[in-house]
Length: 212
Image (cartoon, rainbow, N blue to C red; front, side, top):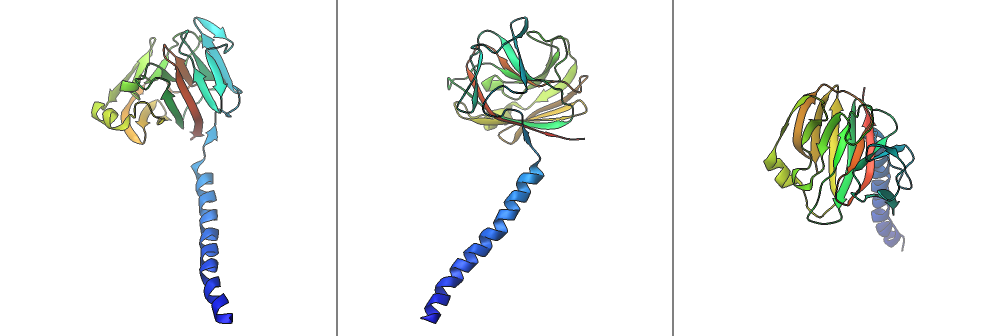
């Protein structure tokens, strides 16, 4: 009987030891990752809104449902962070309501005055051209896009993850871990926003890791 209990106990002990080793490692990885949520999954705390030519309340254009920001697409506008950022890694998940896609975008280094559309740099949200970086509304910069990388990375009709890396005016965009666009512009910091531009799009897991 003693031998049987020991033989049964050894695998359990080994399993417990393995789990004990894994738990601290996972916790350490989460801590090292250093990301903080911009969207709390409940409401628009930390965000402001522009609908049409001026700042506004979210209305029916921007709503939160089951931990997801739902952007109706009409009228044009954007929701944006109430503070500015300079050097960071930004990550967010997105999916269009229609699998065929539509148009939107992530606006970085937004400059006042807030209006549709402000002087800033856009990380394209159009599904077929997602991640393409370019300057808009008078901003200047030189950016390149890898069309072949986009084709491989973008998953139409599914949840996709976009990452934007900003460092002293240099920007890099990745879609599902694949680098698709990069370059440098004159603008180096400002609030971050997401567009309502004609099509219903959903956003979740919006988070940022600030760097020095």
